[in-house]
Image (tube, rainbow, N blue to C red):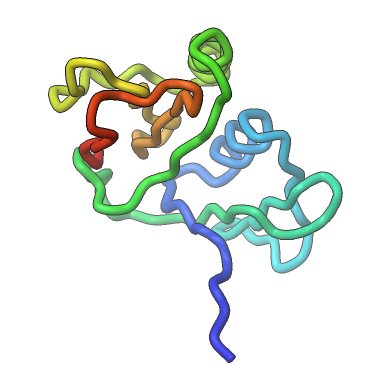
Length: 131
């Protein structure tokens, strides 16, 4: 039976990505199958969550697939955006924000785009463009 595994993020610097994503999401780097080009990140209580893999591919300015990180309120969203920027993320000058967005677009230290979404806010119509 086919099962969905976990997202894999292509990065240029595996140790830097491990440091960012473990701090950002409270994950733990697994030693299983760890190498200079691959690292699996797990939830602290067990279970794979995410992997980072060395890649020479350029970052996509509008990736077809990205991560959404959820918060429950606008205040939590703002605090998490500040915290993630403090960890090395960058704010993205996103030209596709709707008039009443529920999300903020950031980029990890490798430039991979992701969104911090306020689940307590429902924008008009609920449609959100994909970064």
